[in-house]
Length: 77
Image 1 (cartoon, rainbow, N blue to C red):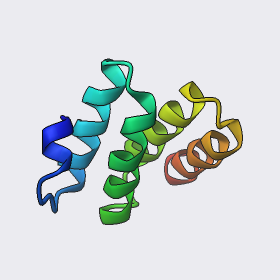
Image 2: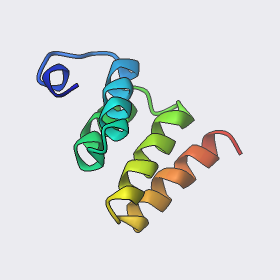
Image 3: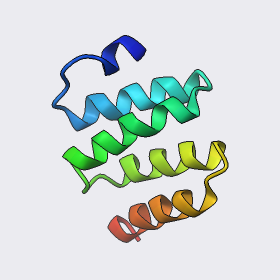
């Protein structure tokens, strides 16, 4: 996943997947940027916002996590 981040990626799904791999490995802080890049490419997927929120929650940034969770809920109430 870390090697993939260094590559040229133009797919929101790939960015999200890299973030998920990193979070599963416990690298929550490293996962934040891939999740943000996924959202930048496709802000309409609630799962991307949720995944970002989870990573932010794990690192203790509860304010940003709430914002991400609310974005996910706004897309799928």
